[in-house]
Image (cartoon, rainbow, N blue to C red):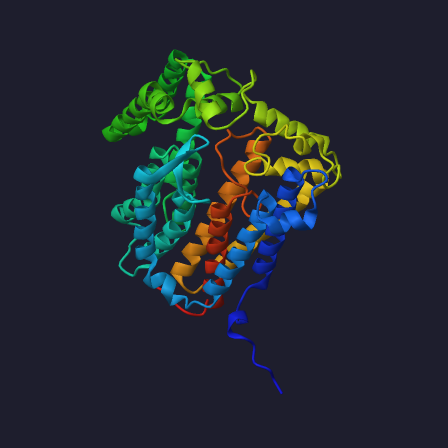
Length: 447
């Protein structure tokens, strides 16, 4: 006699579920390794809910309840309410301005008693739903410039709000949704322009302003010389080259200095300069000391102290690591934020190159599985949502790990499912399990 499977298990991609459980378990173990005090009773500290690893375990339990609730929800609910969720997320972000609490230099957190909520983190789920909803509409012609601008606005608006809340790291995450747009037909030229802009910003910081202006002028002159025959036939080509030169010089001379002086916080600017190996001398040198002390950070003469200690911790792990609770750099708190932004160095020191490689392998398998799931969807909504999940996770993983080894500035990006933080863990849980729910109904066409 055939036994009918429970409805919750029908069509569920269990590989994604197990990868989620494995990653969160690694995260709890890493937080335990970074914060456990010798001699404390392990069982009691896990049950006390007073330690970081016990609270992360609680968040894991809450995430499990949310996951079950999502899996029992009809997939049509997410398409029907996508725009409402987006409006709700924007509303939450706007509430931050009058009700925020300053935490480590950011003004993006609302505190309810002992619980903290960061709407900019949670809003990633809502943006993903709203963007997938918009791109899947029958009347959306994404080859049209107007449609592309609307899609970009859906992603960029919460990013601008996040910047105003001094949460630049999370603001950058929203730009990962442009990868979804690229998959749906956004011209590659836009991504090339974005990459070129990033190169121009770095060049502005590294090269003397006058020298860079001369180099840009030489490049424009060379382009005119090479294309002189085409320019004779099409005069607008000359105006295009002149316009690009004007924009590049304007960005180099005015836009970048304005952003670094008026938008970014001094300690953020300092971290960017440390990443590219240049000294940053602010107009008011006391600003960095004041902000870093307000953020609860250790002040050292060496500006890239965090990254150097992280590199030492990862390097000291060697091939197989020192073992759980045996790392010196992380056990004795040499690495600031080693349970949150720099948790990868805890894994590197404790489990070495092989452990770090294994973690990256799990992440790679997770991303490849999500992309595979995206491509098997019949619904444009489900496909766009899946690519949104992959893009957000890829951005977080890449930037966080590059942060810990000095290849990217320290911008406060958590490592998905690993770093300590209730809002981050629940956000990634919701993000992933909505995808699992949509995939379970992959034969259904959702709009």
